[in-house]
Length: 173
Image (tube, rainbow, N blue to C red; front, side):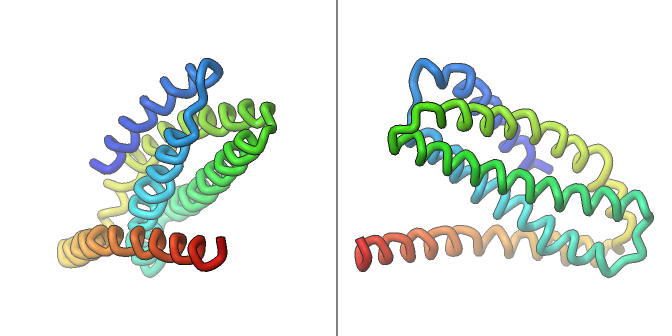
């Protein structure tokens, strides 16, 4: 859950930037926000949930409520990914001369800053602690070890993708 605190910190900055976007749009800052959400919030944080926690939970006889919340969380992750995709498209459209895309960017940023607090609260207060009861101490320790391994590999995954993108742009400019 400590990852949530960093996400919340970033969202406070995004909220402040969004309030001032009409007075000056910084495409590099939007790219930085997109990178943070895609790599940290989605791939790293949601990735651990989906690839480790939810995978292991699907092997357990879950209560109807916990299964419902898990499925809602998965749907919310998809929603966030789509919203970030819309943000990227709006930024590109804006840079290509469509001034109206600034409104779409603002809408996407506001959507994300409004979406994440409720999503985080659902995970923190209604899901993570109760579902740990499905797992033995050894299973929880193995999951935590899996989380550390996942994090350890993330930097390599990110920069392999960066190298791939640079190679493609050099080979096919």
